[in-house]
Image 1 (spheres, rainbow, N blue to C red):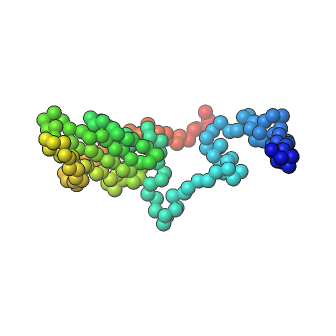
Image 2 (image 1 turned 60 degrees about the vertical axis):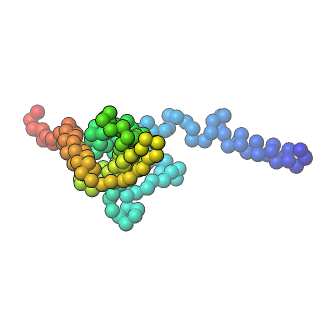
Image 3 (image 1 turned 120 degrees about the vertical axis):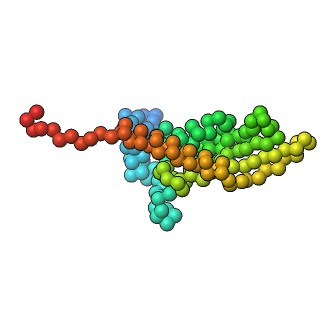
Length: 187
């Protein structure tokens, strides 16, 4: 290394060490970091340390992008309950997709189905989910043909998911219902 390179490294190290206060990086005091995640996000956004995508992107429609936590999303829970007999290949809540593995029953081993459920919104309504069903038929030499079919099974699954999601949503709303009670000033 040349003398100039050594001087540049030394100066860089001095600046790095001087940026630290008592051996800690600036802003690393854990006592000043809010415990509540919403407060932490708010503080980080105010300080310019992050960004947030809003639903107003893409023409202002309110579809997708604002999903609830998985255990409180009625559509998500209902979908998993309706297809619980099938093995899952992927269940990505943040991506809004459930993909099953190939499934066949004992009666017809040459034919299998695979279901893909895509969530378009977290509201319980008929256009909230998109269900695709793929059929795989194999012959004796293990040559398989895969086709997507939209038929009565897709409609029946959607109907069952929406019925169960409506029940879950009602249960969740009833549990979270807290009436506003005006107390008597004499109490």
